[in-house]
Length: 457
Ligand SMILES: Cc1ncc(COP(=O)(O)O)c(C=O)c1O
Image (cartoon, rainbow, N blue to C red; front, top):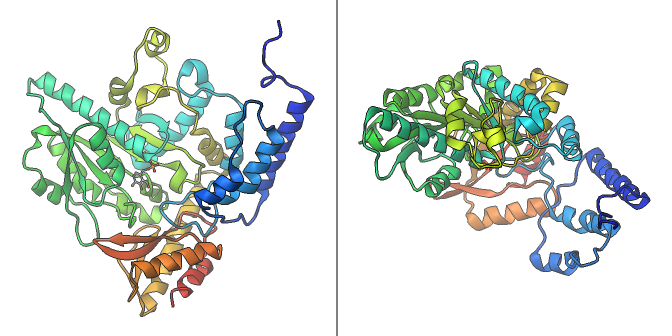
């Protein structure tokens, strides 16, 4: 009996389709500059992009045409130098092209048994990151989907560890646990607290937006229910690095876990000039950094690193009759270190790029982004109708156009995208509207930034 496997067979038709998809991928990778593109209304997409899912299939040619002509232009190219909103992503050539190899190689990244080679390569990158941050040998972890899952996984490990410590010391287990972070910490932490049914103690920051250890000390009245203190190394809104040493020391004085959320900003440590900002990061019990942010890797990848990976493993290993063969083994199984089981070997595009270009190329690209941000801030300072909201520290610059209301920012932002200049969105701080750029793409030039600024006259 012939199995219904036409989808899996190598046939002249499947070969032709493969060639066509390669050609499209090559065309997209070769585009320079890339189009910015932009969102299209639901009504428009419904009119032009519906009806692709049918019993018989519309065929690869028609599906690829639909993607190229309708879906792709309705999706921002995040590697465009004018994509400056939120936290952009600009993958290197090597990382982008190797992402296709990861897909083509049908790798499983969850266990050593299935993916030893891929896991070994990823772990070299995690070891290197741990060493840059100053964690001792033996630190390690896993690449997860993004900073949100990275923070949540670290906090779950922190709480499990604190429960074990309380049990070992015969201390009562609080009815509700809490962790500490600054009022400017990323929204994923509030989300983690909801998911974990625990409380957050939000601590005020100084005028520059930094969390200090003494503010943590002053804000926490009862440490018996606190399982972690989280500092941010590069806030999302302003790119500000908390005073890591003082915060880490307070956490450790109270015998609780110190986690550093460096999803965006820990990458800045690679620019030697700015290393001092990160003083004390080596106290971290865990940290995260997203290669899909400022380490020039494609979505989606967050490196989660534990000082003592065994604490992550104890918190996250899943058990089942079908898993005993791997969960009982001594080898390194990435699935054991976060909230996931099946995983793509998503650290490999970053590994390939880092191996190809070397660490120095990363140091230079990151230092260049910071330099452009500082020059841009200087230009803003020179224009009397503009005002910096805070002095930039890394590669995020936030400013106000004096006299503008929310509607003015909205109209301006819409105009920039309509003219395909840039995606720069309105933002706000303490109730005041402003706008911001996050300069994470080495192709973003000071000329482009000035062109954007000139449209605010
Ligand atoms: C400081 C910080 N933490 C966490 C996150 C969440 O990361 P992700 O979007 O990859 O889940 C972000 C995202 O911008 C961030 O800036």
